[in-house]
Image (cartoon, rainbow, N blue to C red):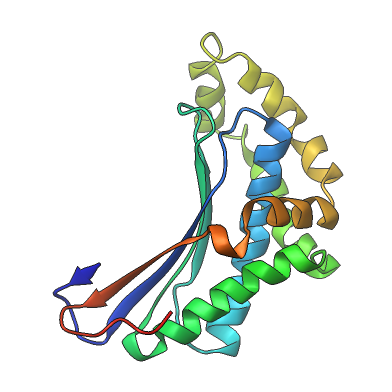
Length: 187
């Protein structure tokens, strides 16, 4: 894709197809993979390469479309750094599939998730979210009640298995957003 903005700005986005959010354990595992991958991408792209201040990762699993979801890793970078950033993102995702996440990274990823669960019902927003779906999606209440225990039961091996299943290197669609007139870097 092309943009008409500054000639040195680009975006590298890699998108893997996943699935819907029907399975609560699988959805939670993908959320944990998102958190772990976010830490790893930040470390790889921003800290080691010094290429971006805004790398990010997201897992979006549809509640509406059966079998539809995506896992995305992206970074805004200088045009000269597109190839290196694309390689770093791909390598980071491949490494998540090759070996279990280190214990300290796993703990850093899980801690804010547990905090969100613990704080979810301390305000009206959490209660309203559950009440809003109480009749149309009663399973979401049971899902919330089991969330903390399921999160504590997840292991680094579970996250690795999800990465192996969903983040296969050849399955990613790579989208580059480049300035007009700048040639695309080699694949």
